[in-house]
Amino acid sequence: MNDRYSQDVRVAQPLWRTVRQWFDPSDVRAVGSTPDYRFSLANERTFLAWIRTGLALVGGGLAVAGFLPPLRLTHLREAISLVLILIGAAIGVRAVDHWARSERAMRLREPLPQSRFPAILGLALGLGGLLLVGAVLAGVR
Image 1 (cartoon, rainbow, N blue to C red):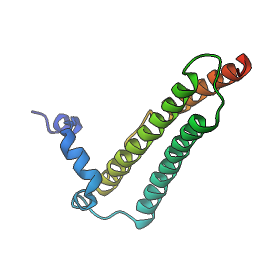
Image 2 (image 1 turned 90 degrees about the vertical axis):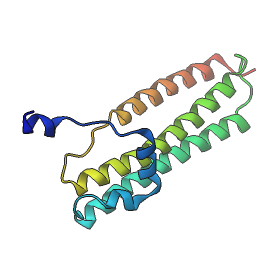
Image 3 (image 1 turned 90 degrees about the horizontal axis):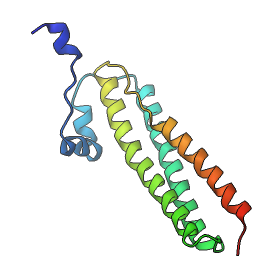
């Protein structure tokens, strides 16, 4: 087999190994060499920003469930609440995964992992905002 080809092929890790990296940062730090600490700190700040975003969405979902008056469409309030909470939870999981993958890539001097998640999240939140405007304009009981 060609050496260049074998270097370009990436084999997916088993799920258990990926999850283990989330909870055992020493496993991530066991590979490669230590990058400039500023890059690691920037990676952690990005992680914390995603966590804050996830917490804000979970809090927004709880606020919708607790304080939004019932809407004309039955269970719309509950659906909005659940969607916000689930998106917030997904952001939390995605944040820790991206932190671990980015840290590993920096240590191995590989390109940082690309992600479509911010674009998907932005589109989902934009669509959700338009749906909320429609629900508000449809009126409250």
